[in-house]
Length: 178
Image (cartoon, rainbow, N blue to C red):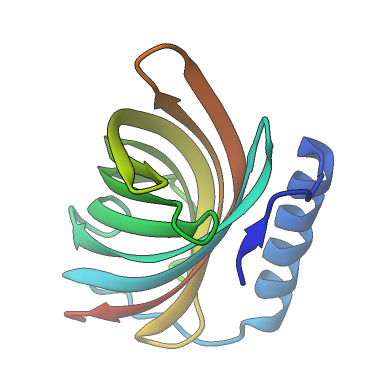
């Protein structure tokens, strides 16, 4: 369902999609956001990552723990089915640093993360170190619900070589504690 082995897309088309999506969210959201600090967020994620061999779709989730109004620590798990018995699991943790803006409902941020990826092909698994960075925006649609588009670069450190990927991640989150 998410396997896009022959998909081809450029960095420019991914960035264009990101900007259009973010602009549509900014234009459509009229909800008033809470000014109080929140305790955290739970997010469902869908992602399209580009690898040298083509595109892959990921699904997963993350939990954010607030470090104040704009910043958070997060733990994320994503899964990509790569074929009948092949798969890639990412287990990541990181930091999102919100950029200062006047709006409480739209907060742009940068992220840095690291962790482990488990790649399984024909029932043989390998663990790889993984790290990366991204930028995006938390866009509150109501007091508790919002969306979070993010553009990411991610590096998979295989034993023999390293593989870079980049792509667009879209999350729908529920904010709790405010």
